[in-house]
Length: 223
Image: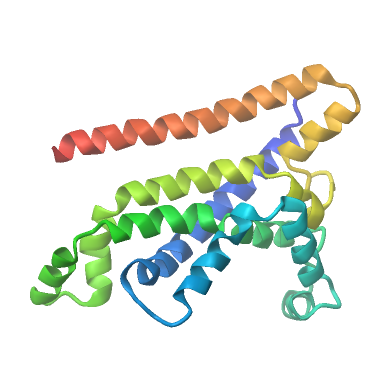
């Protein structure tokens, strides 16, 4: 039997994470690709850290930081009246953090592949830095943007460790489809596990397929 509530929650989390994180990733990836500054290597290492940390370790530190007695959790509760631990708010904030490299790194590589002459020509035409970003850099960096969108969306759907540590397993609030699959497996509901796993694979495969199809079409029109 399909856990539709968990699936809808996962899709909501994936969509919100993608919508919020990709613009932030653009703002972060651009200086990482173009600029040299003190601490750049450290910043890149921090961005990449979720790739190498075990999800339970990252989840533990996020859980500690989001706790009501911690500065971040206490400040959030004072501002909103809500807690971050075992809530969708905390789940979304954690999702933004553990997906950071999946959004930043493809965009950074795309920006890094843009010839400097293209930016300089835009400046010579009188475009400001922001107008250069919108009218020159982003159109040239679209493969990286699409990669960031697909990777962030797909990774959010499948994340388990961090989600369980920060959000727990609360029905219709923090129980994602990945956690629901684990629960069904623990209950030996193999048909439910098979159905939800197949649907998750189908969604992820469709997202990747749509990315490649769109990439080929845009490349064909540009050619």
